[in-house]
Image 1 (tube, rainbow, N blue to C red):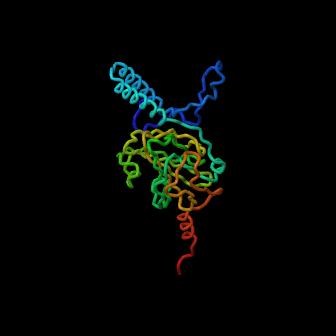
Image 2: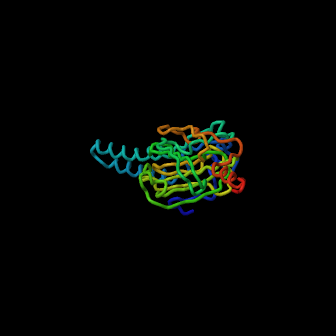
Image 3: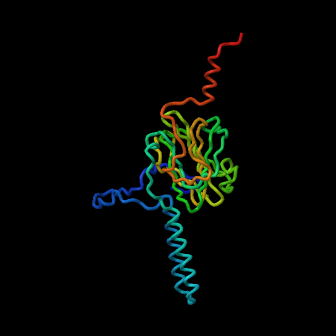
Length: 275
């Protein structure tokens, strides 16, 4: 399968980190948890090979302090790569699993919460929550709420720093919209930054998703935006630290709620004609 920036893997959706061998000779492996995100396997392998080559070359250096320095560089490259692609287990809160809340789709820090128009999927006013991921955060992304995927788009673009005000409009990104069972629409975006140069996601239209489910990764620093309608109660604040799949960002209605624009449209359509 060809690899490229912003690739979407159609063959599978990441719902579990468990190895599933095709034979029954190793039953203990059926639930053996993978420690690292599968999107990083090739990079991890490359880092290990490079580290071993650097380490082997260091053995030919006579000066012990130089040899130690080169060995440290090789080992450091391996350890950082393993650390970056770690994929810890997460359990969504009960409220999110029951469809009463939405959670952070990414680890990081909330850097902005603003009211703005969202023309792509919500098609109206929205509250945007922006989460910045540093290279030290877990970069596996998770679905923020239960629902059905209705909108998926990949947009090539620039590589402004992730906290730039125009990053969500100009940078390479994915845009994914889901409809909650209440009819509430939620749009979330994986946004590449100045360092992050590859977006991967595993969702397609009509996929049924649950809060906390893995859906992709943005490699080496990035940003995640979440758009919700203005009537949604956002319980997060700027400066909050988030944990993907676990930190509740706000509550969701249990039943269908009409948006303000829909209410206004219905009111105008039922208003008596002017004399």
